[in-house]
Image 1: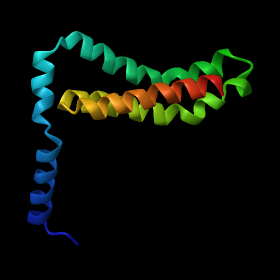
Image 2 (image 1 turned 90 degrees about the vertical axis):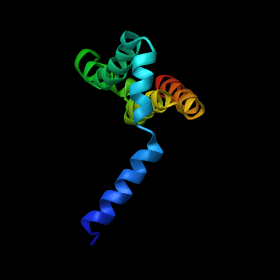
Image 3 (image 1 turned 135 degrees about the horizontal axis):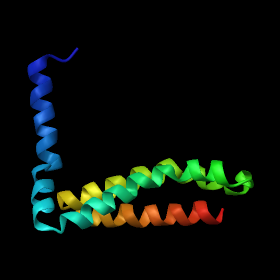
Length: 108
């Protein structure tokens, strides 16, 4: 079992490495409305399976998209956070992988 002090030291070190204060700098420096819309769009992506199940009788033909759905959401969300913290190469790579997964799911 980890003692409280050791945990706090480790946790604060991890927060420093993630560089969370950069998010506040990015939000102030960039167009906040664009960032908010991007974040909201990523979260609305989660609602796609509901529309597939409700409105489409040919669910089986489109269910292949669901294989990638949760991974797409996680990678898109992480890409936005990486960009806000200033890790642009990581954000670009994750965003590219996200778009590849969307295309794989759509065409599979």
